[in-house]
Every structure is written in C-alpha cells, then in structure tokens.
Image 1 (cartoon, protein in one colour):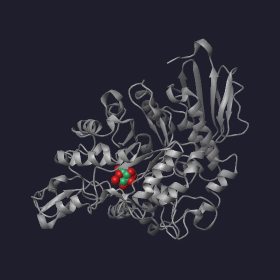
Image 2 (cartoon, protein in one colour):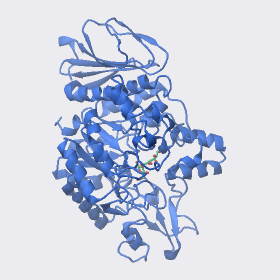
Image 3 (tube, protein in one colour):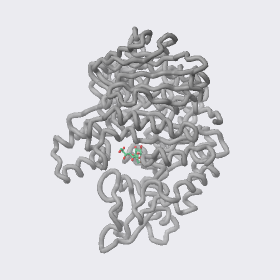
Image 4 (tube, rainbow, N blue to C red):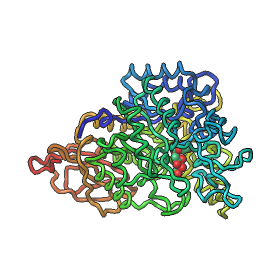
Length: 550
Ligand code: TEU
C-alpha cells in the first residue's frame, strides 16, 4: 500500500455555528471562534479539521444550502478571517478540509435565480426540471427531509427536483458546463490552501430521477474521476465522500487508489443498525451487538487492501454516541472511553466530532420548539400526518434528531457555557455545568485525556494504522474484541459493551502490555479476563515468530 499522510491522521469535525462565538455579543459560532480554539484541538492531538460549510448561505439547513461558493457567510466572518484561519492552522501543523456541497445549491444561488426566469435561460439546465404528469408530480421520488422531492414552479409550468428541502434544488450533473463551474470553484479553494474536501451526499450526483435512482447512479464514478482529473488529482489532498449508499462491495470503487477517485468514504451501515430495516431512522429498534460486530468486521476486512475506511460514531447529523450506545448517566465516562477505544483501535482514519472528546450527550429537549433543525420540523409534521402520536414522535426525535449533536459546545461552567456572550442561537444542554472542556482539562482521568492518549498511540504504533483486522469472540453477545496484526506485532482490543461485568478467557497471558484502558487497575495478567461495566482494554501481545504477519 502506498503510504498517505491521511493514513495516520485524526480528524476533528467542527460545526462552526455551535463551536465558539469569537466576536463579542454574537449568539452563533464563527471563524474567529475556531481560531481561538485551535490550541485546544492541537492539545487533543488531532491534525486535520473538517470545517462544516461556512459559505454564504441563507442558513435554511445551517449552511448546506449555499448561495455563493466563493464567499464566507457574514455570520461566520469574512474571507480575511478564513485566510487567517488557514494561516493559524498551518502554524500549528493542522490541515483544514472544507465541506463541499455540490449535489444542490440554495434556491438563492444566482444560478437558480436565473433558472427560474425562463425555460430557455442558460442556467435552466443547471437544475433538474420536469413537466407535470397527469397534472401532478413527475414520479414518486421523496425528499430526505419528508414529502415529495418535486416542487411546482407555476411561472414556468414545471417541477424542479430537491432531495432535501425545497430551498435546496438539486444540481444537474449531466450538464458539462455546471460540472466545470464546480471544478473551477474547487480549485479556488485548493489555491487558498485547503487540504481537501468532505463531499456532502456525493453518491447522489449521478442520479437518474426518471428511473427514480438516487444513490450510486450510472454516471457517479465517471463524474468523480473527471473531478479528480480537473481538481485534486494533481495535489496531495484528502477527499472523503459522504455516502449513505455505500456498501462493502461498492466502497472500493470510490477509494481504491488505482481508480483515482476519493481517499475514503463515510459509510453508515453500522449507524443504521438501531432502526427497523426498511423503515425510517425514527423507527427505532435496540442494537444487537453481534450485528455491529458483523458489520464493522465486514468493512474492516473488505477495505484492508483495496481502499480505506473512515472511522466515526458521530457527526452533526447523528445523535451523540454516548447517549445512543453508551450510558450517558452513571457510566458516562467509562462508556464514552470504551466507545472511543473500540473505534480508534480499528483500521482507518478516525473522526472526532466536536464535544465527543468530552462526552457531550444528547439534548433530549422536552419541547418541539427547542429543535431548530428543518429536518426535525418537517418530519414531525409528516409523522403526525401518518398517525403517530405527539408523544411517540417526540420520543423518536429525542433519540434521533440531528440537533442532539448541534447544541453549543460546552467550554466551561460560566454563563452560556463560555460559548458566547449573547444568548446562544440554540439552547444549551442542561448538563453544561458538569460536562465542559474546562472540567475535562482539569481532570487527568477525563474522556478528553483518553482520546488524547488514543491519538498519540496511533501516531506511535504502525500496527494501529496498517495492521490487518481479525474479529475474535465473534458470537459473544456482550464483548466486542478484535486483534490487529502487523509485522509480527499483535494488538488486542477488548471491550465490554454493557454495564454487567463479564469474564472471558484469553489464553497465553505471559507477554501482554496494556496500552490503554478506562479503569486505573485493568489487568490482563491472567488468562481469565474480568471486565467491569464498559471496561475497555487495548494491549500489545508479543507472540514472536508464530505471530500472524500480514
Ligand atoms: O446529510 C445527508 C443526509 O442524507 C442526512 O441529512 C440524513 O438525511 C439525515 O441526517 C440522517 O438520516 C448531508 C449533511 O451532512 C446534512 O447536514 C445536510 O442537511 C444534507 O446533506 C443536505 O445537504
């Protein structure tokens, strides 16, 4: 495998609106705030920042609705602030990757404003328009935010396509001129010094709306190869595609280096295991641990030699992992560290979403009015229309709403948790007095220092970066354990995924060195390993010549 800088990197994701208000008397996070907190990220040990969209936007979907790809949204600052941020990152050895949202634009983008003018406007074909069929929508395509994916435009007697809100019209990637406008824009940011892109819903760009194909359309990979050729291919950048439709079979198509497409993709198979198959994510079922093991094992094995995994539990669209599959009450610290150990022991590039490193929890607001997200507001209406009760709907929202991850970052126990001077744009999580960065930095046993140590281990041990993966205790319903093998070294990760203690037998205990654990006195000196609630241990095992070396 050709070594790449991003093989050893750990990425910190920033959702700028909720990260840190750097200007006095503002209520939302901004670029100055990011600059102020770079030393914090450096201290954690992450060496790349993925910055969620800061482009000009009416903020219907918090910046995933872009009205000008070439300017910074005034609520986040100015282009000078952005340039300063790049510079400040460079000074600290941190790289920055931008969010690239090119499946759709805002309806306020001048391309769309032009397209609305007339059917023969040159920009009309930058979007996807269809005539009505039998006086109604062209077909049954649904928006991911609820309702039909087609919106009627009376002035020109046609529907346009939108896979997200109707303020986010889908771009027509079959238009060559549009594609090249996008490539020019990407080169503008590359020239500014960004180190790569996180590509929003990139598996949708090859869509075939007439055959109701959304993900993995026939032209997807040709477009990505063309993009590679015209933009990042001649630079040493990191590109990660957000691909809800990725499978272990098609993921190598994106990330096999020989195909010249992307560095890696985000796959979501493991994060959909607690929804009822075939239903929406609001239809929740309990996670079965053996299923999680099966899915992660498949991905680890499938991409070991012809692709690359991204490793993540969290992002700005997902509930907080400690509330989801850990225990955000009595064992918050232990379970957050266990989940971190489990993930950071695997092969791939780990992503940490802001606040994860201090164990921030779901917001679980009582009232619908506290949820700002357009998806939540739309889905609430849709679920009520479908016959779900208010309480059922709110229960699902408390578990799964994207706003769970979007509450303002908890910096300290001061007013507004040190996030801003003015009242934050979104309600703080009530627990900010106990859970905050200041507390975490003072406590040597905090979740923060556990993450810091895991990141440092990745930089030190090649087996963590390049080792092959082997699941052990495959059928065990409570313990997630695996080995990594590289050049005669064996690394073992053993995690009790639940609160009940459990004993397991691991033969050959003579030569074990613990690298990380979430209890002070963890022991693997005996073949019988006893694991307390959420106990997680990572150790090196010297097996000498007999070691599996691949
Ligand atoms: O998300 C893609 C996406 O499909 C999710 O929004 C998904 O629908 C939901 O979160 C979980 O089922 C990306 C961005 O990450 C998201 O923030 C944007 O809203 C969306 O694209 C549109 O740009």
